[in-house]
Length: 239
Image (tube, rainbow, N blue to C red; front, side, top):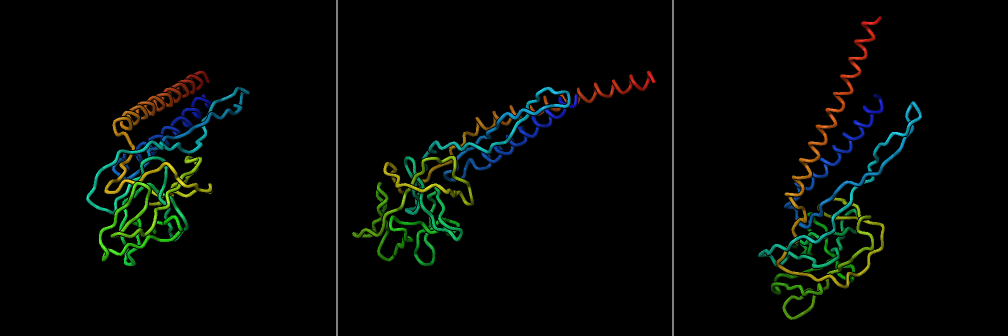
């Protein structure tokens, strides 16, 4: 009975974790370039008091869905999206970070930045300065930025061998210890933003399934509790 209770509690912890991730996916279905996630669990066998093996669950983190989101047209020349595998390189106060969120702006120094202030870096590892007095800028498919008739800079777009090892930090950015490589096959699309790849209907279906599983686990706990109570009542009556 103790095993039934502990296994049930382990199951409920897993379901709680699943629900948190599902809720986070749904909350970010409108976040630019957001990648949906799903939990990764591993079975863990432990000896019980009677020598039997009991199956528990270990939380091994999350698996990120790296499927590209749909592109949404905008009216801003500062909105950029990456077609294919790749990330913008961003210099922040915490160090270099990477993102697919191309919703950019110009700061007071005319530097191209993220909405949180991180500076977008060029292939020369320098901030990209755009003088609006020279006219509107254009971005080619290869990431080359042109103002008027002159090239200003080229966006540094990189990729990684193991995207799952990238850790989320803040404002849609990632950090990793892996060395970046140039994203040769990636293309830049101006006046476009990548949408979240969250599938709301699928997430709602998963939420219903988790809710039902949690209810079944609670019923198991209640059944175990009722059995123990009946046993105590019988023992008390016999005494």
